Length: 386
Image 1 (cartoon, one colour):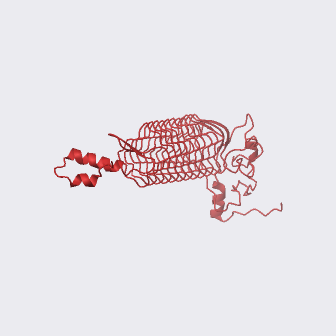
Image 2 (cartoon, rainbow, N blue to C red):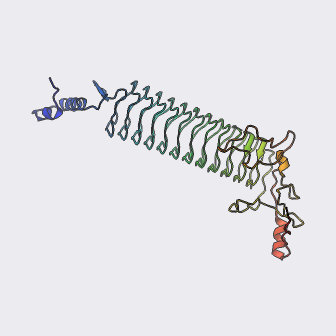
Image 3 (cartoon, rainbow, N blue to C red):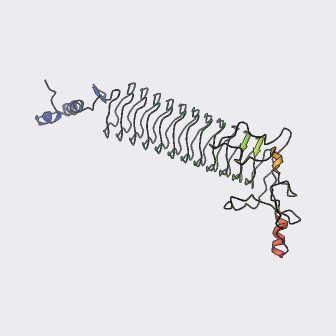
């Protein structure tokens, strides 16, 4: 005997609201997609390998279920409940999961590309190797989750909570991480190139071999942080706070460290060549001097400073202005800046700061050269044959 459709029940007279709701549920159960089933009182329930594209499943309860390899592409899942569920390799591309409950669930290998996960509860879940490219995860809670190898390329992670997360080797290139809280997270071998981390919190995080090249980290908070083999080349770290942090074999070449605070920090093998230390508080309590910043448009030439005799130090050596020469870092910078192609330090690279040596943080004043220019007595150095 076939089940009665909702349309037939609605045709009956004196249909009470309770019966009308039951009719709608009955109609839904007869129209579920392949692999789906219905459970009394819980709405439509997908099964493993089921497909429900562009479905309206808001507020539905899928908790403690097993939905491996299921597809929810483009579905409306507002406030849906996936807590404690097995969602291995599920496909949520372009789905709307705003305010969804996804805690304590397994989303390993799942696809959330272009999905809307604003304000979603995703804490203590696993997302190993998950695809979250271009996803909107503003204000989502990923604390204590396992995100190893997940791809957040160009994702919106504004104000996300990622405290105590296991996020090794995650891809965060060009992601928006403004005001993100990643306190005490394991971010080893992660790629943050070109990302926006304004006012982000990284205190206590493990940043070993992480790559922040070219990222915007204005007002970053990274106090009491272990930073080893980390690349901040050409990053904007204006007013960043590294108080009490341990920095070993870190590259700040060309970085903007204006107003940065390194009070109580420990420096070992730290590269500061061409970095802007204007107004920065250095580990010894001194203040970085301001210097004239060379035009980075001329990428083929090294910056040069004029000494009191009017000669230019073309080799970047230690001149009278107090700038450290390459020997201060133990043999100079390799052609790739001490990094391999993916931005990480070469494990067999040179010892850039021999034991017992100390980086010289003083910037070149250039005052004498500027006065000579004003008086018209400044002379360019003669060209020398190499």
